[in-house]
Structure formats: C-alpha cells, structure tokens
Image (cartoon, rainbow, N blue to C red; front, side):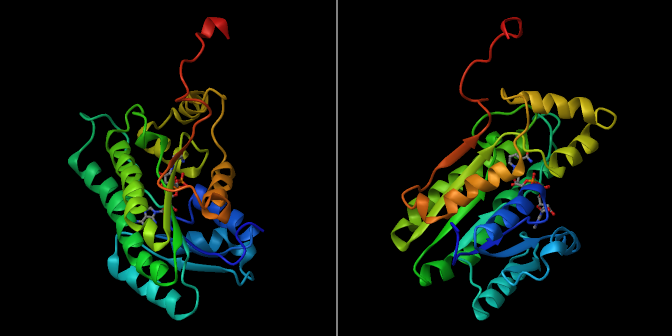
Length: 262
Ligand SMILES: NC(=O)c1ccc[n+]([C@@H]2O[C@H](COP(=O)([O-])OP(=O)(O)OC[C@H]3O[C@@H](n4cnc5c(N)ncnc54)[C@H](O)[C@@H]3O)[C@@H](O)[C@H]2O)c1
C-alpha cells in the first residue's frame, strides 16, 4: 500500500479523472475526501464504496471561499485534515482567440486558476502546521503545448503550471511539495460533453480524431493518470518538486512519421 496513512482531498471527484484518482488512492490505502460541485453525482459514483470508512464525500464548489473554509474546518476538527491535496476540478472552453468570448476567460480563470488558488490557500496552513504535505495540480498538455482551439483553457492551464512551481519554490522549506500532471486527451465524460456541446452531430468522428492525436493511436485512460498521481503523492517521489509531468503518448516528443511511411 503506497499511500497508507495519507489523507487526500480531491476536487472534481465526480468527474472521469477524479473518480479514477479516488478509487486508486483508496486501493493504495489512503483516506480520501472526495469533493465535487455535484454531490448527487458523487453519491452515485461511489455507491459501491458507501461502507468504506476511508471515503468521505462532500459537496464543494471551489469558487466559493466560504464553502472551502467550512469544509477545511470540519476536516481539521474531525481528525481528517488532508496531507495531500489534488486540485483536479476544472472548466473547459473551446475556441481560438477570435472565437473566445471574454466570459470564457473569466470562467476558466475563475474555476481553474482562482478556484485552485482558493482551495490550496485554505489547505496549506494546516499542512504546514502539521509538518508538511503534497499538492498535485491537474494541469494539461494544453498548459505547456499550444493545442488547437484551446485559447482560454490553455492559458488557464499554463497558469496552473506556474502556480505549481511558485508553490514548490515558496513552501519547500516548510515541508510542502507541489507538482502537476499535463495529460493529452484522456477518455472521460469531459471529452464527450464538450464534443456534444461544440460539435453536435460529429461526436464520433471528432472522438476518433482526438484518439489519433496521440501517436500511440488512443486516448489516455483515466486510471493511467491516477497511477502517475499515486507516485507523485507518495514517499517514492519525495525528491520530486515543482515539476510538470507530460503524459501524451509522444505528442511533444518530436516529428510524426508522414502517413505514407507508416
Ligand atoms: N479529459 C481530458 O482529456 C483531460 C486532459 C488533460 C487534463 N485534464 C484535466 O483533468 C481534470 C479532470 O478532468 P476530467 O476529464 O475528469 O473532467 P470532468 O468534467 O469529467 O470532471 C471535472 C469535474 O469537476 C467538477 N467541477 C467543475 N467545476 C467545479 C467547481 N467550480 N467546483 C468543484 N467542482 C467542479 C465537475 O462537476 C466534474 O465532476 C481537469 O483539471 C482537466 O482540465 C483533462
């Protein structure tokens, strides 16, 4: 059990990657505080684990500072204060600069960047007081590599990459480590929901194209992200700090073979 004795707070835990993270962390011995904007979806996703006393479900909107403060106070008062924080919740907006509306930037900044800041700001003092902890931010390949039509989302994820480094630099002397994962396309409902919103009638065709985007020819599975997260939140990665881990099947490695040569 690589996470025995750890208590991990996950945001966006009703989503595709958040669900995989929660199950994988429980399987590795951690206690998990699984939070999401949508508490009903949380109850549905974790119905099979309802009797597991290492799993605690809580509704949490990461844009609401008062909700975050109340949850952190409740956890600290009940001996379930987190020593691992996974900032996973996010919003996405598709489009190039001329398609994006100013409100799109407000939304992705409000949830992805400001929300991540609010949660981390609330959790960090307790972690420091208890001797340290680990922050893992779910950034994206779009935060380190300009992805097609991801103007607002990519900018917010680039901000997450730099927030991760800042936290690592500023708090390492107080026992805090911070890293982030930059995944390419992960097969989750997140992908299908934005395809349905932006490309109605072309969902399957677009889904196949997104799969082929990775040179490996498929999307990443959510549990593959969760396995990297286990490493980054366990003692095995004690010397890993302030880094961005790209999981992209080779997208950013270099050239792709011309189709005629494949
Ligand atoms: N799926 C991908 O292809 C992919 C690729 C790279 C990075 N990511 C990142 O991984 C993370 C998880 O993505 P996913 O694919 O599981 O998405 P998802 O849409 O399946 O899950 C996101 C979850 O966040 C929750 N959420 C949204 N706004 C919130 C708020 N204000 N407060 C609390 N919760 C909120 C949603 O309810 C949802 O359950 C995100 O940060 C995303 O940007 C996803």
